[in-house]
Image 1 (cartoon, rainbow, N blue to C red):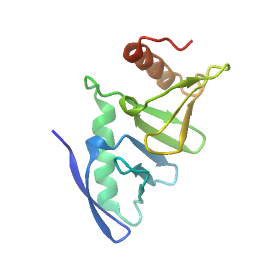
Image 2: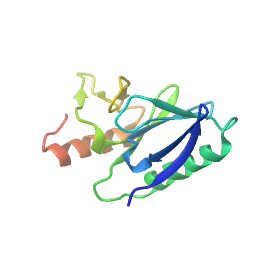
Image 3: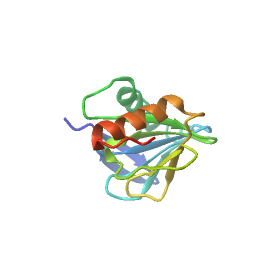
Length: 140
């Protein structure tokens, strides 16, 4: 069943099916960014200016990342500045570099996500397992 949420952003009201949002970016300053489904339009929720919607988004992220649901594969990836939460089912290509890092691009966007096996070992293994189980190919 779709998870619809009403969000107010930049003097506009959005009603969004959050089950179609494929990626979130949680910044160290507390902002949460996500991209509207089927577009590259970012929505940035700041707890200082929109606390109610911020809590709704955080609650949704806790819900999707705390449980393993069949056919839904969320992964948390932490880099120097941000934490990304991505539904791997929405990724259409993966690239493994010679140094072992895996990269992929967020849907409908130009943001590359790079996973280092040393700094994100759990997420790295989850992506490797997802690629193997989904495609039949092993990244090694």
